[in-house]
Image 1 (cartoon, one colour):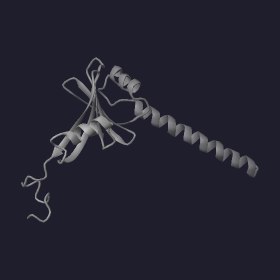
Image 2 (cartoon, rainbow, N blue to C red; image 1 turned 120 degrees about the horizontal axis):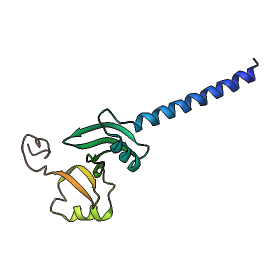
Image 3 (cartoon, rainbow, N blue to C red; image 1 turned 180 degrees about the vertical axis):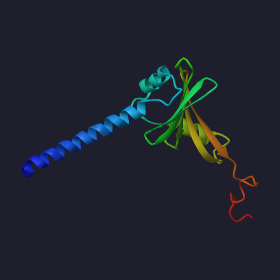
Length: 149
């Protein structure tokens, strides 16, 4: 074999490996864990194609799938008939302007925001803020007011 043929074979081998890796990753992400009915896995795959599935679980006939999308952690909920119930996504301050304004106009505007979750349901989308009043001195807030201890 000539060196040109060896280079061509190396390039073809690289592309073949890349294609196999891509196919394997795609198949692994679309196959649910044992116990998850195909219809539920299919409903998720239709709603959220090509996502990184972290874990499937079931509790009281509600199937949940933990996944990441755009570096955001989410959980989608489906009933036993593969009907989508809701999706919860952990979000940062990249919120719609109306949501930000609503929070800043509320009585909790000065409170510390620990987490924000976006809830999407068939009927509506809303945001849930987990907030904390750092002015309360208890075991969780011993360092909340610097210089006052």
